[in-house]
Figure 1: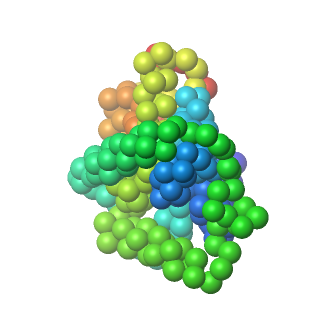
Figure 2: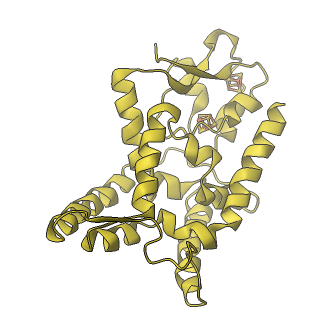
Length: 245
Ligand code: SF4
Ligand code: SF4
């Protein structure tokens, strides 16, 4: 069952990656800015808002189970699987996200506020790459993601560049303040033999064993993929849908 769960998870994110030429624009921060400058709420802004709401109950489960960019990065593991050890790089995404949010606010104010909702803004029948030149952007985005995975390590794009992750992290933080029930990891420290399999296999390169030892399974970079649950020979870690104790 546990090996099957990871096969299913990977199949979902790999398949969604194959649809990326169609859905890419729903993940585009540039399109949100273009829409904002015309007072338009576009498809990606709607998606980002939905992901913020999902994070209130499911944390970053989207990143682990649905994200096509996550699928591409985990496909990179098959070629080169490099753990991010001892690198403090998570702050980088906030340095880019903050000015981007500031720009959006400026553009919306300049446009006189949002006046319309257009989920298919600048798309042809909802398809993102609908002409050959569109593949230039597509391959540039892919190149950055793959280069980061190969040169720095596992899911570096998620740690440093993803413009959606901050929405979900903020949703999760809000949930942690009010502590309503949500999907989370729980652990039984006394069963742990410190074999380190969880730490070695975490796609976000988190020190899961340390999280277990400190009895602190909450981590803003955890994507709730369940890999640590499924590799642990002692069944130390499990999912729980409950309030944070
Ligand atoms: S895989 Fe399980 S037993 Fe091994 S270190 Fe992680 S939690 Fe402990
Ligand atoms: S801590 Fe576990 S659930 Fe969270 S990202 Fe790492 S392997 Fe996935």
